[in-house]
Image (cartoon, rainbow, N blue to C red; front, top):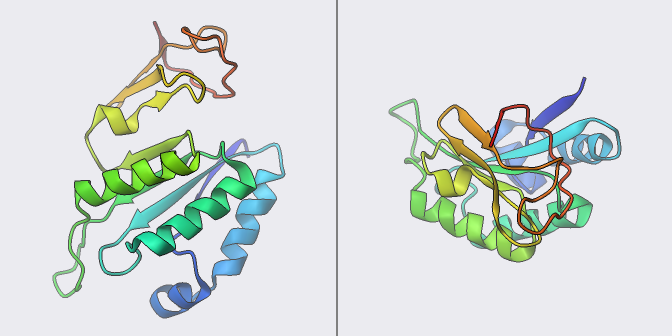
Length: 166
């Protein structure tokens, strides 16, 4: 296995038990274990209004990820309810953008919005100078890296991108 994306639904055991009838710690233990291995890992967090969208819990989760490895790519995904009897609604872009900005402020450089068609929040920026280094538009990816370095400041970027290079 070369890469894995782990879906971290919640940041507490209470939420995992209440919503998923599962436990938080085994999921977090897997994230830690994969992080300490040569396997590339990413985390996805589905933001569900009224369930896991409070800022305090989100910031606690982001800080924990930052302490483990600030370079783990994190995807914050927009929720779309599929069953009409669910109490939740579609996650607002405003909420996702707020969480994106908070995660960047804490220090996560590789944060992305999922299920949102917005180039700004799906692209990758140099952690050193904030130059766009990979642009994603739909299913198209444009890689601006030169020998895995930022084209502006030459900061070394440890990212694998096999798509089109400019």
